[in-house]
Length: 297
Image (tube, rainbow, N blue to C red; front, side):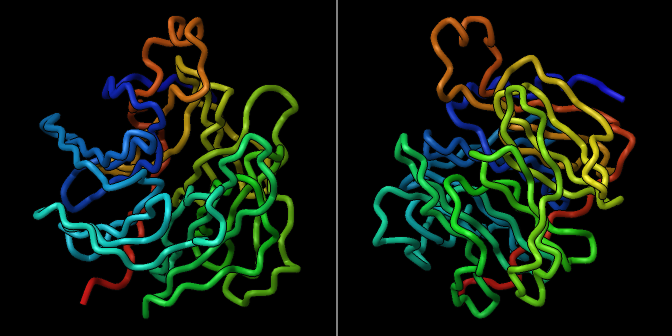
């Protein structure tokens, strides 16, 4: 089964990422990483908001306060108050590795924030790691192999397994013993075809299927629990970066895209690159985004 996502916002983001649906406010949030901006769209009215960030915003999490987000900035974690615009630093991450920055992140089913880093250098060495911010605000490195570009972080419906990838490799992995912490129980979940495309942002739907943005391939894939491809959603741009299932009935797909690394000729042929895309009534229900389970003191 296949369909095509349509443009929702001609955002012209250089690196749109991290899209999330907030069911309380009826808004779609996403970040333009290189533009150091957080964006929001009210789905029912079309009203848009944006906030300038003090540095690149790689990822973020909703919290139990509608006005507070947990930010994954390039250099570390922080609180953000949307009412005042105040950013309060929480943790510096990999301060000893100036060549890395935060990248993908999402809350697990227990309300903890799990995120990874990436090597910004052209060599893309496997020096980056995965981390978890616990509910007591302590930070720990997860016992997973180091990677070059962390991505595809999401969790099984029952919360026992974590999915992740290194976007430099043609595979998505599943950590079957995420809750127990036994890192030997990591296995290949899905192997990508040898053509263009790398696994980027991902989410899990209510049927425990994984939706994966395929950077460079102009599509979103839905993987069954056995790792086979169940459907494809195509886009008129080549670089989808992250996905979220939301809307009033959780049956709408939102996809961020990017202009990064496109040549002038490619940009001319992809005038909608960097936009926020949307597929209505995909016939599958998503799940509410898990909120980070703590707030600023």
